[in-house]
Amino acid sequence: MIPFNRPSSSELELQFIRDSFERGHLSGDGWYTKKCSEYLEQKLGVSKVLLTTSCTSALEMAAILLDIREGDEVIMPSYTFVSTANAFALRGAHIVFVDIRKDTMNIDESLIEAAITERTKAIVPVHYAGVSCNMTRIMEIARAYDLFVVEDAAQGIFSAYDGMPLGSIGDIGCLSFHETKNISSGEGGALLLNNPAFIERAEIIREKGTNRANFFRGQVDKYSWVDIGSSFLLSDLNAAVLYAQLLRSDELNEKRLRIWNLYREGLSNIAAQGMVELASIPADCRHNAHMFYLKLRDLDTRARLISYLNKRHINAVFHYVPLHSSVAGSRYGRFYGEDRYTTSESERLLRLPLFYDLSEQQAGLVVEAVGNFFLQ
Ligand SMILES: *Cc1c(COP(=O)(O)O)cnc(C)c1O
Image 1 (tube, rainbow, N blue to C red):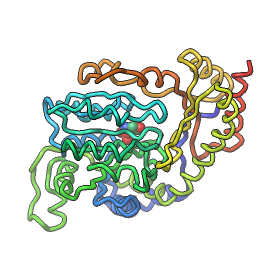
Image 2: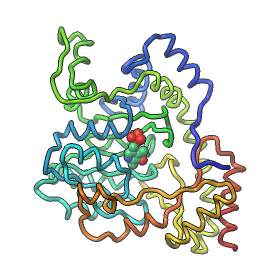
Image 3: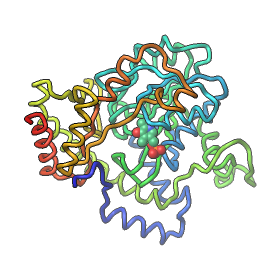
């Protein structure tokens, strides 16, 4: 079976795990957490990076930091992972879902302005497949209406928009190091703070609402409960794995890109014949090959292709069911405007296996199987 995803590991991850035990510090904010944070701050050019237990946690921290409360509205696409919306719903926000663009599956920046009301507090662009939203327009709107921007860059590590790393453009960025992402520590995430004004409170929220970080820096002589927060620290054991992955990140991303390009070239024929549609990468985006997807004619064709590939031991999968059509999505949010592309495009989308250890030969088999499906 060619699986959809498999985590990559090398000697380095194992060596760092061993070293982490030898250092005798496995809980949060140890040696490896520091190494990862510094690496990311430097590489992404953000004021502060705080490692978290997941991107879900980072999004929840963002909602607390922005003081999101009952009745506030937050604008985001419906075509996203649950956590993007759940983090803000937890604080009492009403989610306003806006349609996506057909070409990138990202929020349609031209529809955001009309969805703004006097209750709107933030816009949450999601960089689907590691391909950037139109951040120029989104930042312009945010400035004009005095709104915060939280980038859900869970899939976007080391991608860039107009030369700027994803997650470093809005007020706050959130990364994921889940097993299914390019760089992984099993579970894990990071909160990127581009505005230094957020740093002190973010450290408190991340430490269960205590000023423990100040205490360790000798700024206060005891630590206590000063704000709301939760247990958001990534274990240093996971950070050890993450640091190994960060040091290998060029290698990891180059391999993904190579497979992505093989798929792209291999499927260009059937795309030219109109049997499938392939993703389009806007000229101002550098992507990280997080995902390779294609779009079929309709839901039925997709189901038939999934089962065809499964019979040939290839695990290809569909993706999000739009949040506005979910039970919680309709309770905590509403769709603004017309659902022109969210539902219809999500039903056509199919993701092919893509991970570091996928061989070029296996990628060739996948291309061949997809091609054969259309020859039947
Ligand atoms: C993976 C993902 C998340 C959640 O990340 P976790 O680290 O698993 O919490 C959130 N948003 C998007 C867009 C994702 O792809």
